[in-house]
Length: 253
Length: 329
Image (cartoon, rainbow over the protein chains, first blue to last red):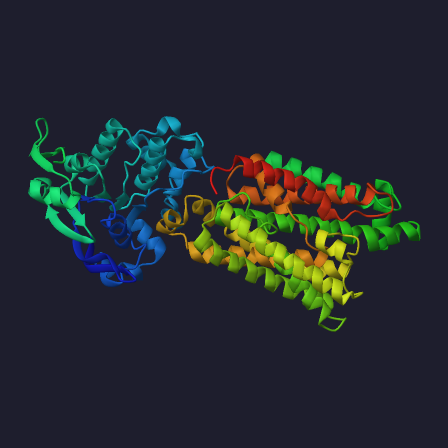
């Protein structure tokens, strides 16, 4: 669906991202994790076609994404950038409706999808509120509703659950995960390793601009790898209630 | 919403009638009507009334309508592009830059083409300044620092403009107080007709980008990811706002704050959608400037106070309020 081959991004002498390759398959949820400054945002914005790699190519259904016109791109992938603007005078419903913009030229700007998207993420009771008056977590939820309303086969989300409480984070990620199973794909940068592991089919661990591990959560979550990447002692155990690993922090000695 | 817009247009019509009537010779609505008809060869009003209506009042009132609406449209465009209610032609230095262009264009061309050259060079300088601000915004962001830089550049251009007007002391230019603070005292049909196409096309461009501006409220990156040609829309709207500002300065000098006041008030009345914001702001801008001009004509008897002083008196207060409420620099 979307594939990156050997993409790098350099600013001056600094390699923000070096020769990373990744194929996103239909119906999979990929979580991108890694410490601050590892290159998660750079990777996602290159995959979204918002940032041109200095070398390598990103292909959307076998076409270089930079050759795909903006509006057509917007019907294939939705992108949530990090730290979205919160001071918006439009209502939540207006903002979610903007997600339908790429379909207007096709005459598919229906309201039903907008309402369904708000219900799916659980923000419908705030539909008539001014977006700028929402709390951080609610605003993020409304942004996700906008992304859902865009109805694209691929969602690229940069910290979609930033500012949400743990319960809402879990529900939101589960909703997105359920969504992927009908042929949609999600790739999301997520800080919380356990939250990421609970929904991801595959994980990408980024460190200093390269993917140091790609695989299922239980494959890539290894004590020594995570401890080195995060420069902090970490132990991984089996999750007592869910399938998959559980990451625990130890004290620094 | 359409009712609110209808109300605004009704108020505008009333204020325009007042503007036609007020002045050295005061005219009743009836006299204005007779004068208008008589000018079209459809009546026999006294020659004085006809002359006052057609030669003095009509070009003045129509210019105010055009200038107020134009500055408001430029304000809506700039506010939309920069997501900042303080972004407007005067505070971003665009009007002052255009002022320098108008002065140079009118002074250094043959008298016959001076008004046209002034308007065109003013529009070009205004557009260039708007694009320069876009470069500035790339480093300062679109918040208060950008506004401060615009004010700094604006004051610099204003100083140069004053210097040129003062040194040249040419009869081709209105006195510098009127030029620097804005006035409709010397407006003629010719000024009006030169500026009208420039302003109309600027307004047309901003109206055509209204939907893109709506989506750009989400931020440039989200709007682009939704298929909006953000860079293209930004440049078109900036050039349109610059051209409008230049044409306006050529008619009436540098009038500050109209874009700020109109777009702020309109966002209160019409909400955030630019397609609705634009006509509401244009009506409010014209109403506000019409009232300012009536005050400027009547407050000191036969002497006219420059209209920009009246608008700055109100606009300065609004800016103060916005700055006190702003969260970050």
